[in-house]
Image (cartoon, rainbow, N blue to C red):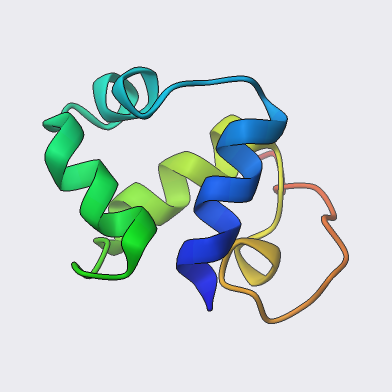
Length: 73
């Protein structure tokens, strides 16, 4: 599930839930629910996280195991 990718990436980058919540301008509890799969994450937040972690949306959503790069425009 994609929410597992959220936690894995966050821990790989040594970030706290609060730091990522701040990035998304939301409360830590809201972000915690994203990671637990208890709340749907908005598309704009997925895009922001893909850019932040420099991975493709496909990787973030768990559709591929290849991290890839977020396309730069």
